[in-house]
Each structure stands twice: as structure tokens, then as C-alpha cells.
Amino acid sequence: MKKVLSILGHLWMFPNTLLISLLVIPLSMLRQISYYGRSENGIIFEIKPKGWAGKLLTRFDKVGISLGHFIGIREDFLGVRVLVFHEDRHVQQQMLFGIFHLPAYVLCHGILWVYAKVTNKTDFSAYRSNPFEVDARRYAGRRALNK
Ligand SMILES: [Zn+2]
Image 1 (cartoon, rainbow, N blue to C red):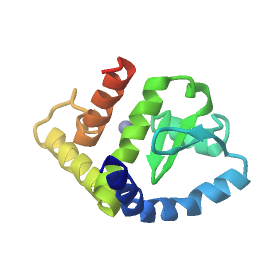
Image 2 (image 1 turned 180 degrees about the horizontal axis):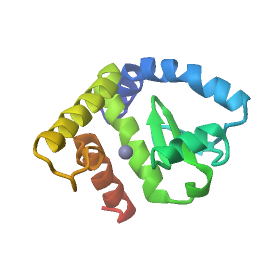
Image 3 (image 1 turned 45 degrees about the vertical axis):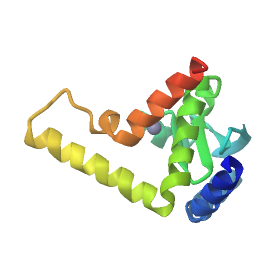
């Protein structure tokens, strides 16, 4: 049953993967990223830190990203297992939410951002408080501790 659900999840999120392929293929051809390996559910690409894709990621204070089945991790953070678990959890979230994952993620972020502004909470991070991020951090922590 778990295998069937996994296959359905991969199919359900396939439009995300197809769409992001339009970005991954040219980035790969331009050697901004390169194939690194597989995670449990995704395909890992290393992002060159000095390339513009790496600089863009760094500009947003990020070292990893998941879009569709593609997990991009900045080359100098590839050894951080917990980061791979975190990004793989985002892939699992997409297997559950399919094409609705990105809109739901952005909506949560927007609501939390407005909440922080309206309530004047300067120490509040809409990114860190996003339920998708909270879930991914918890999952990665459990996996790192083998729980
Ligand atoms: Zn995340």
C-alpha cells in the first residue's frame, strides 16, 4: 500500500517536476548546477556557489531548495545530511499537495508575513514559521536522530 501511495504521489507532483525542468535543463547546460545523486524521493543537484544560481540562493540566505523532484543544494553544503532530509521532506510535501504545494506554501508565507507586520513582531520570521518549513525541520531532525 505504501508503495502504491508513493507512486501516486510521484505522479501527482509530476507537473511540478515537468515545469521546473524548464529551469533545471538550461541551468545544467550552463553548468550552474550538476547532478549529484538521489535522495529518498528526489534528485539532488549541486549548485555552484560562485555561479549566478548559487549567488541568487545566497542572496536569499538559502543553501538548498526543492522544486518538483529536484533538490538543489549549494555545493559547499552537500555534506549536511540534515539539509538533504529537510529538502526531501519538501519533496514529500509536494507528493501530498501536488500542484497546490507552491501556492499553499506562498499563501502561508504571505499570511504570516502580514501577521508579523500587523502585530509589529520584529523577531518573527514568516519563513521559519511557515508550517511547511516547521514540518520539514522537524522531519529532518527526527531523521538525523534516526527516530
Ligand atoms: Zn525548507
